[in-house]
Length: 218
Image 1 (cartoon, rainbow, N blue to C red):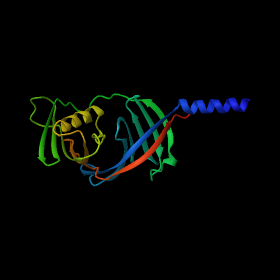
Image 2 (image 1 turned 90 degrees about the vertical axis):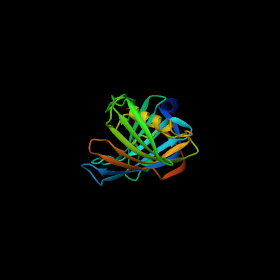
Image 3 (image 1 turned 120 degrees about the vertical axis):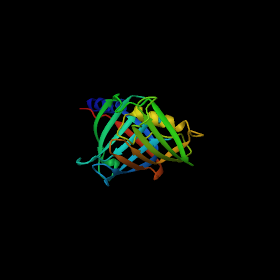
Image 4 (image 1 turned 180 degrees about the vertical axis):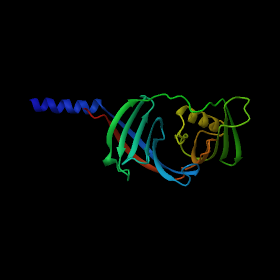
């Protein structure tokens, strides 16, 4: 009887502390620093998203001087971040739960009051941001290439800047497109502080991945 109660408790605990997610796309962010202290350095990050659910996205990051990669799952509807470590070959069987925490709102790294979007050619846009409406000197500049897709543009974070700044960039870009059904293919970002980054998102795969984000009981 005690064993049955223990089993029921364990099953109930798994149910309560688990959340299932479905990802149908996997995209690679091949990142290169074109200018800056680490010029020439490259890394590849992996992004998982659901084309029908904009509230969920996951990032498989590599950070230098860490023994493993980091897998971060953002659930904006639940305002929750699930954090894991994952092996260098990004094998899901190696996932190790670290923590589950509420999403934090951080102050923007720079003030942006105006965004100008210029169409350079088909599917290529230059976005310049300014600290005030009257500013003549931009404080961030992005050259972005997009392509048509079958789903609304996923708002991938690719700069070391807040989600709020990313949101402003995406809103400005989407305002110039004839449909929300585009995706990023390439981005060159000049942070106007001596660093220029190139992010190549051209490689994307259709997948069918179900992931159970579980919180380990201590």
